[in-house]
Image 1 (cartoon, one colour):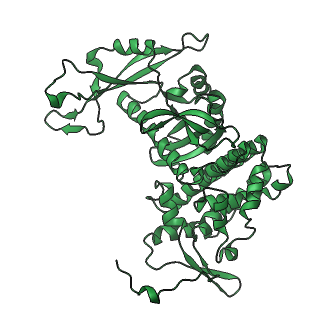
Image 2 (cartoon, one colour; image 1 turned 30 degrees about the vertical axis):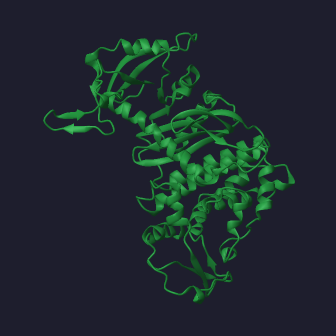
Image 3 (cartoon, one colour; image 1 turned 120 degrees about the vertical axis):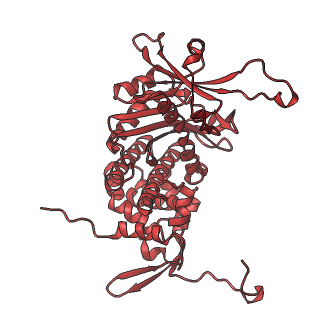
Length: 468
């Protein structure tokens, strides 16, 4: 591609009041309007501080800014440009929105979480956000440490996180998330919680899991709901939360002496090969050739906890360790393995249950989407303001996921940055014409024109009439 005009004959000026750079906010916020975001916030959130007035309008503005990619309070000014005032009213300045976030108490944050759960319930009821959730669904729970800088942020502390596979101490705040997905659908976030940076991953896991399972049920999760988590949630309280709410569990077990002894008792004949990454299917042998195998045995965990012992399946995946000396002519005397135990009561067969547990890694993509958007950093020095920011980021994430479902099958599973680039960050010119009508003129030959129009038509067609 080459430039058409010479540099001296190319000019630029910012003077068009009819052009916008975020045409996708029109159908996205129309969807939020139809699902009652403003009404839900008005019903659930009651802020006593004077900066908390008009909470529904300000929540909508922050969510719209996050949909546009804002990752700080100052970035919310992206809503005030060109012809945006011809599409939206009551757009607040970033300073006003910042004061609004700082007016939140912890109780107000919990009220906002309630509004977010109700919005997700309405989104799931009006579109195929979680297809076949009534058949089988997966609730994934995980935490991540968001780095903070300096000592001004309330609650910041040192906590463990993984960077390039290594566990390191990072100063920041801890984010706890629970996502719901199905084999056919990308995850949505059903609950979130901001905690102090030094909080252990499993701190408060029991009540949080109870709340998250309840939220998953309201969104459509049926009888087979499998809670997946890593070893931080391998404790009696977390397992009890699942069993009390009739949810299955699939939790990575800690390699303590009892688990090691149980693995050592598995007979060699019990191990079966699985289709592991980089495995090759041997047609002559009729199976997969790889260095990964799985086996299972019954196991009773938490016997030291009075009345809380649980007997379920211990599924173990083993992967052969690489012989780093093989290229130097030092062959191994015997194979050595890395073991990955899973404690579960999954109703699925061995290979399927183990494969489904590995899909818990989808949580990392959710974390990456949030970090690539509103959670690039936590913008305030006040803990409750950051907690409110996190909750609003979750609302924006679910709303963006819903717009993708209405756009196309591809966008239903696309990552957040892709959805913003294809559907939200679309330039347009606004034209008014007779009787209050308005037309949004978008770029000709836009690569994702069909998906954008699907989203627009789904959110702007007249709602179905109620039958008396």
